[in-house]
Image (cartoon, rainbow, N blue to C red; front, side):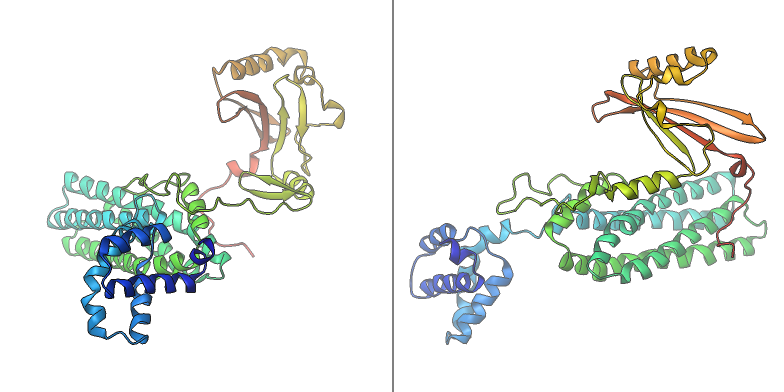
Length: 406
């Protein structure tokens, strides 16, 4: 029987035979039982294909039409159980759609608040409008999940259109949010100018966002559902929590706890020389290069207070040598500061604090030194990370630089 269920054509033949038996007079209950034993579930597309095969086999269209209610009675349980995953709370598409639905009223509320401001920009009305705009800007999480989770999965399938076009529109929407924020922060005194600025900013913004709802529903989601596998949607679902949601929480009904017939997602095949990390995979040489090029110095001390690693950045702030590996960290500091180091380690180990930072002036440079308690998923202390950075140039930055300085 398994070979029939795993073979689409033979499965259709079996189902066609069952429907023909109905036509020949078998009871609905008899056929339902046999159908359940044979298959357990069927999609609406296969039901339509079976009916088409019956017609092509010579059964009159009127006969198929007469049997339609019987077909539904036979397959109702299976069809109900075969609800599309994207319609189940918890599936990423269901969540994205729910956010779009929830965002519509937020846009409506902002429009109403702006109308009140145009009628008279009192402090209370302006603050209400600013609050409605802050609420709208929570939709940023919707765009961030698209850009940083969904788009990369689609790009791996060779479908990069959305990441080029939609991301650009997202940025236009963000620019409009910022522009509207500027108008509400310093509204012009002239009523006509105020109305012109508010309408000139909000109306295009409202149109862009609502058109994006439509583009997602009619272009992005259908294409993504066609191109991505169940395992890929599961992977997307796992990554969503790290970004967060706008106005809604992801449901808990998808994925099923024990989906029938679902194969467990397989780990990518191991590659020689590659170390798999939580958010990617790198060779040892790549890890060394990354750590060397970080604009910071990193030192790791284990639970026994022994130095186990330090990065070899191009311009170290404090000298380090391989001789310190395995050495007690207390012995790596001058006697006058050992008590401070010990207090930090004791506090980290006891859970009294997770960070400790200092900054000093050294040879005309501003040096920032921070210690971080490293803990596992259960909160158990695993060691201490020391990070040192020269902030001299960064402290002098002002304004913005958005373009590459050629």
